[in-house]
Length: 195
Image (cartoon, rainbow, N blue to C red; front, side, top):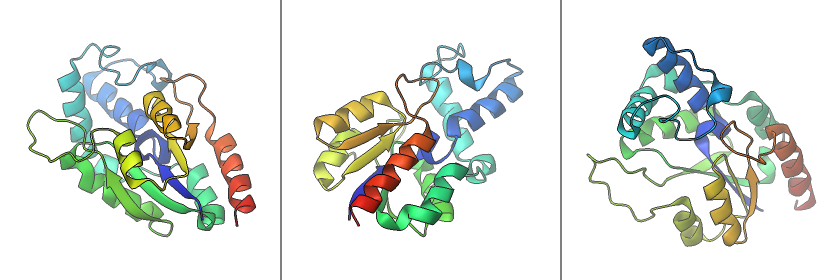
């Protein structure tokens, strides 16, 4: 059975879109999700990187983040075809918010995803031991991932170097990403051919 490693934020959910909505509402800023053409988006929003990650971490720790709905297309795909793969998660979030991310993943995807993995994002005030500094480090160490799905082009390029089949999820901040519907259609074909 093939193993898929799924990114969480902006793949299984719409974290950036949800965070942006609440941030702009609170700051009384007019900004649309489609305007986030780079990620991290701190420069677009005229904020420092530290202000951005602090705001994002605060959102991740809020009930709003815990109550985000999963991407319905992906959830429907899991209901029909999740059994065709061994599914794991590899996310890069701060260590202090990882428990909320794990809770969210297991709340919505516990039937299919049984391995939650984190590459802790650096925060100046944490003392986290980092065995892996990047998702590439993790993928190389674990060594049994066949397919990797992410919204970050750098992560995708790194996985390609490891000869892993990749899918870049289309987002305003990346180019040449695929619509999630197209990715899911391709995964279904792969899964059925490897039964």
